Image (cartoon, rainbow, N blue to C red):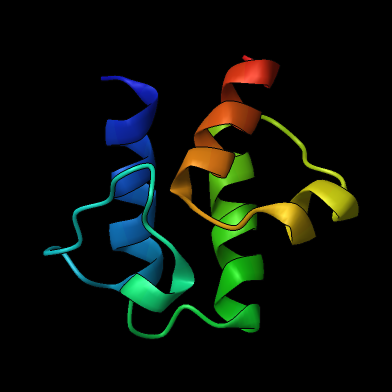
Length: 76
C-alpha cells in the first residue's frame, strides 16, 4: 500500500467517512468537518500511522493532501 492509500485510510478514520477519496489537491474546503481541531487530529493520526513527527510550523503550513504526502516522503 502506498503513502496516498494509507493516508486516505487515515482520512476516512478521522472523518468517519468511508466515501472520502483524496487527491494531492484535496484541501479542507473539500471535506466536510475539516476545521482547525480536526486538522490537529488528522496530523496526530498521520504521525501515528507513519511513525513520523511534524513541527508546529510544518503542521500549520499543510494546506492540502499533497503537502502531507511530501512531508511524509521526506521522513520515511
